[in-house]
Image 1 (tube, rainbow, N blue to C red):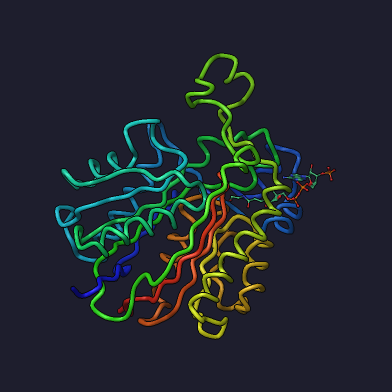
Image 2 (image 1 turned 135 degrees about the vertical axis):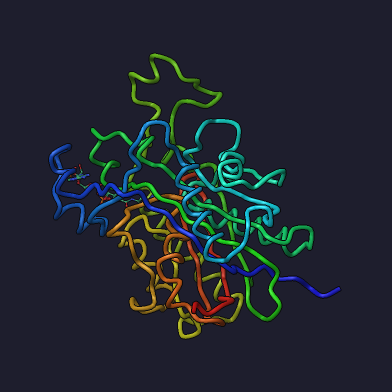
Length: 332
Ligand code: UT7
């Protein structure tokens, strides 16, 4: 039997209107534009405002954009996977809610929780469904309303995160293009460096957990930084090496947007010059599962069929990984 490869055949994205700039943050916490810009590369981030709106609404924006661009109806989709750490609620899955809001009915849908690496974990899972021949059109969403778990009195985290979502469509490739290889890793022993302390089964929500601010992102920034710099750079290098790829073979590095210094380190290790690195952290900050598909969404018109892309991420868990994609289409 012919081996099937999954290809990305459409991209969608959505960011909310409201821009939380560094200048506005200066009025909220003891920080300044110079510190934020030089330590992270961020100028502003988008925030989803409005009662009753959650990550699913960001995801819906991205999925509708994708369906419209590809010219297909919701009924044609047979699987949707959503990567998120800010689900609308603990259960049911945000993927199910996105499907319901978009009009995708009676399909396989579920969430993947791998923090900032979530999009790559979901993408690799979805690709395996296509490769098996069992599913024909699989949507992968990365959506996070990080503002729902950020403490806007904590200057060490509130300057970093933003809200946004991206989505890609996977279909079987008919040529040499598609998702060629993935290297994904997790190490649960790193869980305490970046997590949300309460709200799960170990520490359910209570008056005490709310007063102790344990429903917000907790991060030991410097420690995570050290692991992230090494993890993301090493895994990208390892993936390229095992596929005999050098920096010259790569058209684009698509890194998770957590910190410009981590992105630079990954690009240097993979020997990929800055002009071939997708960077939009200045506009959106760290949207967790949204960063990589939002880069693809913004750069889509520049991508050419056959381009080699290295997607790379590092996140809470710890989780990290890299994926080699041979781009499948030219945008008209
Ligand atoms: O996406 C998932 C994975 N996450 C990451 O990859 C994030 C990794 N970590 C980072 O990107 C960086 O560690 C941060 C951006 C979070 C922090 O940058 P840093 O260069 O590691 O700063 P730091 O934590 O070492 O803090 C340096 C100083 C401290 O002051 P003192 O102790 O030297 O007086 C902080 O209190 O900067 C201070 N500081 C701030 N100052 C102004 C921390 N946050 C701020 C702030 N504004 N927002």
